[in-house]
Length: 176
Image 1: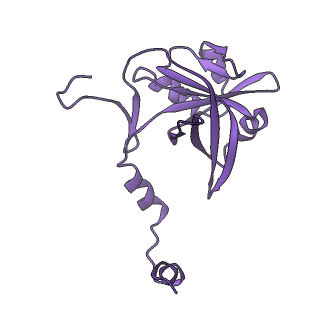
Image 2 (image 1 turned 135 degrees about the vertical axis):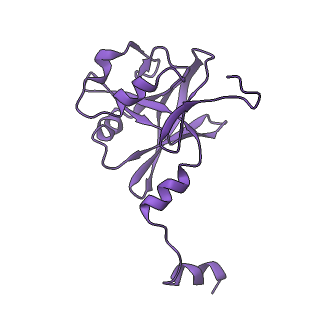
């Protein structure tokens, strides 16, 4: 039996509790996105900071969404989505999309991207995608999308999430 197999069968293997795990992962700064789609002719969206690139050829990205999300089933039905990358000036927009039971799209300008998903105005960048694959990610779902279109709208700095707080990117020299 390999050493890794023995470790996985050992009852004494350390397993962090959820609060400790969240605290440690909070040390890793992330950007913030809003994932949008059209479901039954209605725009839907959810804030997500678990987003990354996967492949250049073909161009693939992924995001993770909680299984408890009420917006997720609507995005899943659409089979297309846009990733809207938020700028440092958009903390209020992020908070809006993280709030339940509000008309998120009544307070933001947007247009349909080439793939048919809402592209939010004033974001620093966007990626318009179609579903490529879905994977089990424990209490989350890992969604991979193939990029159909993309663009940089502004060259402002990104909205950053670190240690449970929003912030902005500052260079080592102290200037944004």
